[in-house]
Picture 1 (cartoon, rainbow, N blue to C red):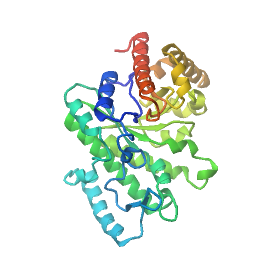
Picture 2 (cartoon, rainbow, N blue to C red):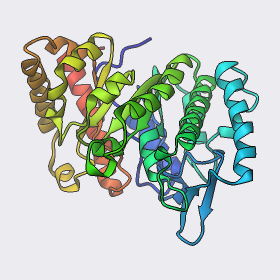
Picture 3 (cartoon, helix red, strand yellow):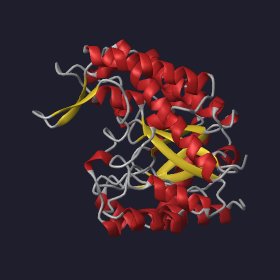
Picture 4 (cartoon, rainbow, N blue to C red):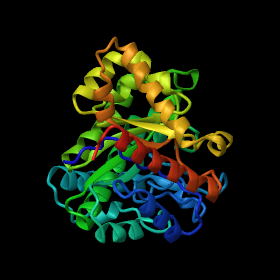
Length: 362
């Protein structure tokens, strides 16, 4: 497998209203790790918290409140549940993909994936990025009629974990068909991880989050992918390391020093071939993005890596950090103007190219 060292990709969402235009931008800027975009301005079903609900049992649309909910009490749900678990068993444990397309992501939940797969077929890419919403974020965003989060319902939490796993496997298998020598990188988007430990989730057990992410991560790896978690804020990074993911992606523009409290865990993570994906391009701060330059981002990266070397008392070397680092924007670009989104994609690509030359990485 090729190394990810100092390469570039992006987190997921773009502001485009036309999928083909978005895909053209992606394949122009990301020639080593292209990704498929979430395009909520094309259709509201492409919103991150909705996009992966297709085909999962118990999901209903609440017309009165204008949102999707889960119903784990109806007779219909228990009928669907039996079939769902049988499908999971045959797909994941027996590698029988007969029913895998039942858990595909199709229109109106995506406009970009078919175009993305078509472009993958026409090129030679060492990696291809894909993504799902993380189980903690989905489980705390999706509620029932009593406004109880799905993550607190043990049965339905398991449904979401397995449903997201099937979504991940479907994407991995599609990428393999499109480009057999390409390694899929599956990101789990977990923005709510930045709230773990606060009063909002005081009763959530650390072990439950680790188990949820770990279950999905192990299947991603078993099916030939690399597993990643994106969190666009501060977090307890030990949770993600303990979950066994290959890649940690965070907002390094605003929170570059947040890794410093976890140098012992990071040392082991990096020495076991884990990667840090530095979200250095500030897509969450429009003013900062408008003002920032390639030189500023390079300086931020150098200061951040030097800080980790110092905090670890040299246990994490600069050479190791360089080898096990690559770049993304700080978060999705869906809330930006087209012009700023293009600047963000250009900056992350240019940062990658500049640092690969600086550190003589092929």
